[in-house]
Amino acid sequence: MMNKSIPRDKKNDYSPEIIGTRHEFIVEKTGKGVDHLCQYSFDPSITSGNIENFIGVAQIPVGLAGPLVVNGEHAQGEFYVPLATSEGTLIASYNRGMRLFRECGGIKVTVVDDVMQRAPVFIFDDARQARDFGIWIDENFDEIKKAAESSTKSGKLRNIEQYAASRMRHLRFNFTTGDAAGQNMVSKATFFACEWIKTHYPPLRRYLLSGGMDTDKKHSAINVLHSRGKRVVAEAVIPSDILKRIMGVTTEKLYAAKPFILAGNQMAGSINNGAHSPNGLAALFIACGQDVANVAESSAGIAVTDLDDDGNLYMSMTIPSLIVATYGGGTGLATQRECLEMLDCYGEGKAKKFAEIVGATILAGEISLASAIMAGDWVSSHDQYGRNRT
Image 1 (spheres, rainbow, N blue to C red):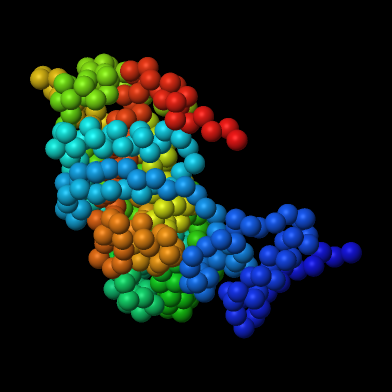
Image 2: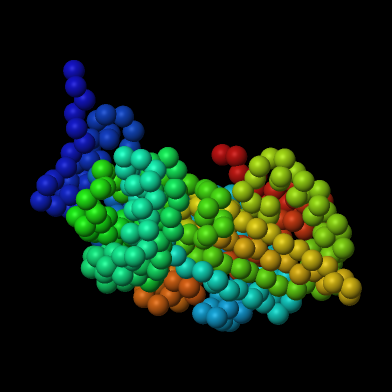
């Protein structure tokens, strides 16, 4: 006997009636209720375009950390940061790092690049045809750019990288996308460009809109080198006496541990030589309506420390592929919009500001966990704050 399909309404699949029908369907099929899933405070119609077969919400606890002092080009001043997590000690740890940097004068954050890609592959009869196609692409960039940008108001084609293999030519289209994360935007724009190319370059046999070199929602070395989303650098100088007073460890001790940690990261083949930046990224992404799958790319990190002659510790974290948005996607959902508005980061013109706040938050978490490990209170903190086993 075939299972009954999940109930849907072709005219309005977000009405209270069809959602109630799906609740009844769940109870009938599983014998389990949805008392908590179905408790929410917003009109479910706002989720149209964000989710299908809507039945309710996952209520993840949201805590507040701060104030976080950011010395950015777009984010300047104090911010209270909402973090959604079920991990005890996470908020406390980030809060502690924010306190430290507050006493050090804040965190300088810089967005050094901003780009989103789609990377089609074009297939020919042989390698020479593929090579000649690459020359033609360079010669016709202006027309290709015009075709791509005809599909979008915000997307701008910056350049096209080329990579050769066998009888293929992989092209990596690089766009700026305003305040949207932009993956869907650049997919459409690149499709328009590819169709123009197909019409105007007869030797082309076929193409695939994504040939794999965009590495969408996957980590890759090319994104670390060339950036995807925002490339953000957060940095600060920490006097030893402040670190000792707040974290219980000296700058010298923290710096001395770095070579051993780097060796372990190298042996493990890690994509991040820092402490735990995906913790803060995931918590911010969930709270602020970001596509959580983008943590896969955004989790790459390059941590650098340096000790000066006076014992002051320079610390920085580079996030080469931070994919965030303040417009579109999940940013307009009810609670997610509220969290962005807490940071004055909802809507157009705010994406780089949000990226700077994210970068500063990550650095606060890095110093806190690294210090806890060296001071010996990492495990005891989890015992104290993270013991909910119900």
